[in-house]
Image 1: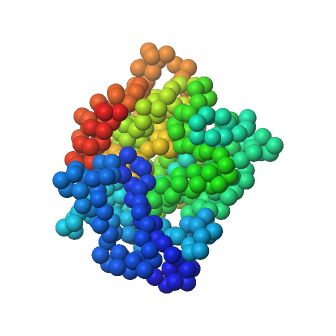
Image 2: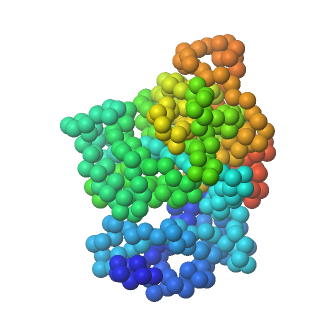
Image 3: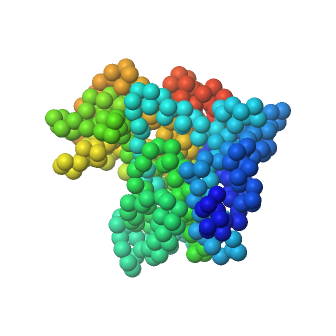
Length: 414
């Protein structure tokens, strides 16, 4: 409340995410904030995708104080506008089981019971186009190209400034492989804060693009014949301040816990693909030849592998992590982080064994060679992915029966 007064905040935008990963919200005046912090704010849940049936439409949004940030592009107004992420409750006070943020919090609590904190660092790629109707690139740049090819550097700089002013730490940015494709990497953090940050990131990228008169999209594969956009997710578990994935005596510096976690992801990969790649368009990206992973294996340097183990710097135990490469930036981050964590923890609980790394270019192998090495492939399209997910016990337990049922039903309709 002191921040609201000191910074002359006139409005507060209360944000939440629906089941499909779309950012929703409504604004209240600053005068209402103290009451809403104590009581929450009621709204009609039946109007939000997947939140409630008509006969149980009332929901309560309770803002999380530690997510308070000032929206930088609101400075042109008489009063500034702030934003806060909310947890959604039923009128009786119970957390709503269809709220993706609640699902992630519940899974993080399960990890905490085992003594672990889950850290993630997502790399979100996206495209700039001249408008929203035609996918016309702004440049013909390539990987890490600078001026004069990269005409979007000012766009990225303004976007990074906005993110940092909202308390979101950025590591670096660069031009990606495809024309007019870009990436801004967020510094790793705890999964709940990072899921909130991903939602803010997508909004900020689009808003700054709009102010420059161009259009930004996180569509996984907007143009045929060039690379699509991914959201590679670096992840690790910490225990008592120490990286549980680090082992100085191992060839890859990967501990038994890290190996079992990785094995869990590989074993359940097909079951969670509809969550991490949730649109029909997602499967136009996940094809051989464009650096997107198609085959289920891991490696340290192999870019055709689903999971990479980035080389850690000497003496940097904290940086030991795995990089899960199949998610795309149009997924619901709360659900994607939840299912990845659950599969990894399942591997640790059951002591899954990690197969040897795949060091050959898997794209160049034929089916017989891949079968010989036990390398499976991901689902070919959304319908196949949904059929696999529908039979998954671990995904149903992770998402909860209510959200799981809605997700499956919605994606079958799609």
